[in-house]
Length: 384
Ligand SMILES: Cc1cc2nc3c(=O)[nH]c(=O)nc-3n(C[C@H](O)[C@H](O)[C@H](O)COP(=O)(O)O)c2cc1C
Image 1 (cartoon, rainbow, N blue to C red):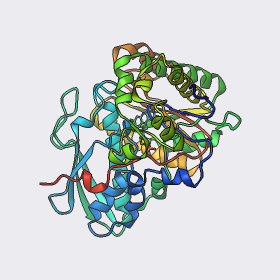
Image 2: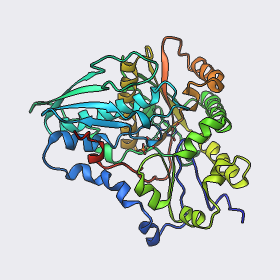
Image 3: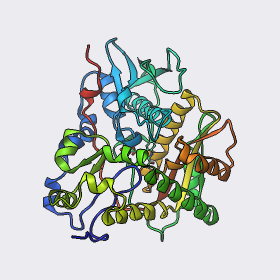
């Protein structure tokens, strides 16, 4: 049975959301409520300010939703952040650059949540250094929680619960305005600059480049399969492993149950249904109505954390403005098949070595999308 494209699947970017045409009461029963519980839990937690701050930080955006953060709370009023090394993405992120950006997002949300409770965070990044080409078992940051009644709260705080990565087709009748672009550019700073574009000619060039970079990731078996291995199909799988790439909804459960959607089908680039899905993903990438990108003066670990800080703030600002966004990281990935696109993108954006583009994002208007799953906060605390 061939699956109608319109009816069925939207698998977008590095993540996947599959929606049913009609979402009624039954759809709600298929919501992976266990996996989504952390979105509601953060505000309800009482007691240790560090755990409440952590419960907000785990809602941060992060590559392939791997949630690599692990926190040691053994010393009172302090926290040490580590990366869980087996949650990295060696094929698409061979130098752990994107994983580090995600940890920068995490630290920024932790800071915002602590401020909301009247605490300053004094964070020391890489207190034991960071030398190799990849992350290792040394801490990512050491953090002190310091009570301070004068600490400024952050106007973007409430957007933590609303922020999403949206992989839908964006509405090509609704432009991104110059005001949107300048509001976003105001988020950047000297450590990580943010530049936006809504100019039509450049928009077309960028649509073409990002779409073709995406196709390279698909056509490179080891990078494509890295995503396929992280797919969680349907409510039970998502609840059991609330990370990676979620395929959810009534439709997907039906297709999965009937054997029409399977890991084999999703692995097979010759399967007509999978090809239709991938074509739709490219269409979504090409529906960008604006882009922004984040640059740093070098590619140090500290700069990567700074890029994460600015990235998550931009994501919160996008939510506040009622827009949608999706990172398009393929052209920034550092494996040989992507080298040409990597340098074409840097040239197109006028970013010269040692400056680096750390994030590239499409902007537009789109339907709301579901929150992504999260492991519960207690699972991210190191037990001794
Ligand atoms: C460094 C980085 C790179 C990312 N690259 C992509 C990407 O290329 N495509 C995509 O759809 N999402 C990308 N994302 C978004 C994550 O997939 C997303 O944050 C994660 O799945 C959790 O979903 P949420 O942001 O809706 O909470 C990226 C996020 C980060 C921090």
